[in-house]
Image (cartoon, rainbow, N blue to C red; front, side, top):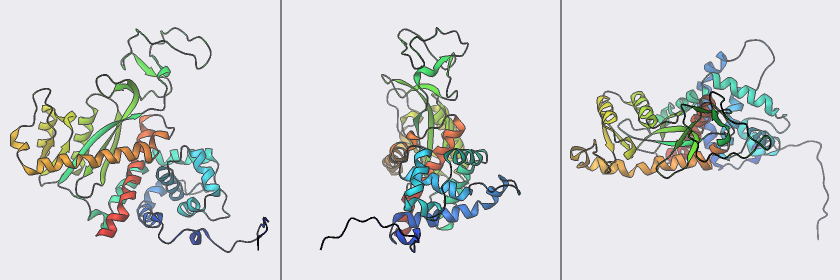
Length: 358
């Protein structure tokens, strides 16, 4: 017998969001790791809020929602709030009940900025890695470092002279501009919409883009990111950031550092060795390399070169699958905050399988 196409609206619901999510859903294991990290940050959250007044969005719920934005490549906060309104999986992970109202997108972004001021993304990143079961997975002897360009949310048309001596454009607000024959540099020009963005090209023959530069330091045992940093883009930013991140990780015993040929500079190699780290850097054959046969002859050098693929895959996830390039943020502080949080999401994606294998 054919059933009737009748819409029946129930007055009450007896099934919770918890009951709608399958028991073997991957987000269940991730949620337990996230909740443990957030519980450790309770004291940090308390410092950011006044003891009296109207309650705001709980920071724990806000961070869980932002992690969902990374996991599912949600384009903007406005679309994220829309998903929270009708997606039961999103409501369950965030901590909202079926009948709980969702927040206004403006209120959501204002509360996110409060967490930015407290550098919560970096503290959450460290809190995830600081859990005992995860700390046992990390190596403190072998690392890989790399950097990549992160496109700024700014048009090349916004790159104007700092002194304002530039002819006005014709044709309205978004008029076409002819840049042929004009010389532009970061010393004389800056973006009017994102002053922290810098004009840089990835290599010879590549186009120049307004961008920031993201850096990751990864341990080689399980391919987990142990440090993330975003800096203004420059020709030396990769080496400067690598030295800074490596100084946070290395201890008294000797370690190794794998990197591509962009890090093959005598000053950087000397600085790394001063940190009691052996540089397993790919040789730049176009000029005299700072890495010689005393390093390349060892089997560990070849092993470090093979593990570089892991960090490139992590960058690929952050810039595409993680939806980081689609988020509309401007300024080094805001972009860096989201970059660090997305790096933490990248680790959370890998951790359940690693924990099951141990």
